Image 1 (tube, one colour):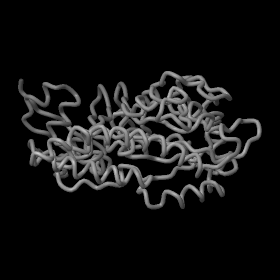
Image 2: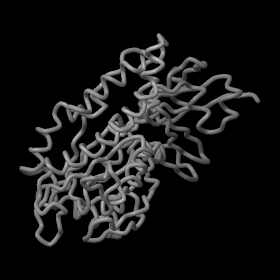
Image 3: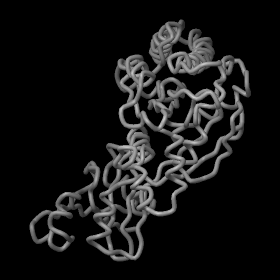
Image 4: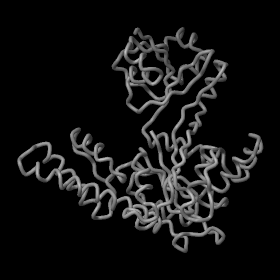
Length: 364
């Protein structure tokens, strides 16, 4: 599961990617500096794993991760191939969610591809290019399905009805994510279309350092624009975040954050938001060898969660032994949680809860 960073050239995408991944993607003050997408595997900040480490004192700790992709800047005409548009749009299609970076700061020393700062126009430029590409995809698919629908094929008629609704929405400059599938059949179809604008989106307002806590007039404009989109808006001073990552000690970083009025780096907030955007959650295994956070899809069953460790665990699943994170911390150890009756044995139907501490029994 990957989240792709998109936006116009020079809005701070590659600098943000560097902050998130500590991989030094090239960033420069001109368009198309990034051509091939950079992929970073980023640790998901989670204070719960620190608490488990404190209690268990394991030999090693492994955090959950999320894949972040730095995609080159899109420009007007990308849907028709402008500015290497086809390649960039293909990169976005391969991602599961979109982190849309909007420039919300003034700086005469950093070129804006359209001449002046206007996050509303910038958002619409990106949206239109993605919508045009999806419209092309939908119309091609309609050409194929129309013939079958006319013969009375029920499946084709269902697909045509959904495609017609999506097409109408796109023609009104509304993204495909505004279409709510009716029933399981439409949900499966919607997934199969792989539309770019159907992907969940998170907006990042890149602000100056002084606006990192409360935002500014540009952030207010973005919030007003996206209020009906069911999308989160995060304020981030990407330049300041880059400075923070350059500091060597935890103490220096904390002083910098306190001076800005922040309790933690904005990058940490963004990573957790991206993880949530991808509909992922965490369960833990906790032993003296290792305390580890494992990533699963929200709604995963116990066998599916076991399969993340090893496919044999899922094939030969017998049962899961579960203690909630809250109970584990309250009683201070697995043994004491068991003594207090907080140890549960669950079968194949159990839906794993975020933060469960688990052991699996299996036989292959």
